[in-house]
Length: 118
Image (cartoon, rainbow, N blue to C red; front, side):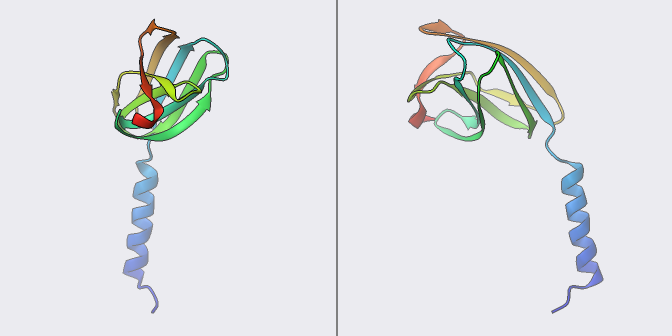
């Protein structure tokens, strides 16, 4: 069965529409933590109902996530089962966000949670 010209045009239009509306939100983070090489997971959703979008080790205190879609995001920071968790942030399309996050044992602007609970 050969596709019709109408079908091919519909497919091409759908591809163009998806490319034109690609996710373009960016989150730039200055991370103050208790060591380098700490795993930073960007998670979509809310604690208890989330998925890992991207992960990277911290280096030099700067962590950047690009090409994000609009939605709710938070970070899980740490190399162990118990991780530091930031508050959930809601991002809009085509925006740039900046955060300064301090992770200290026993204090700071994060809470502690089990990685499995996320």
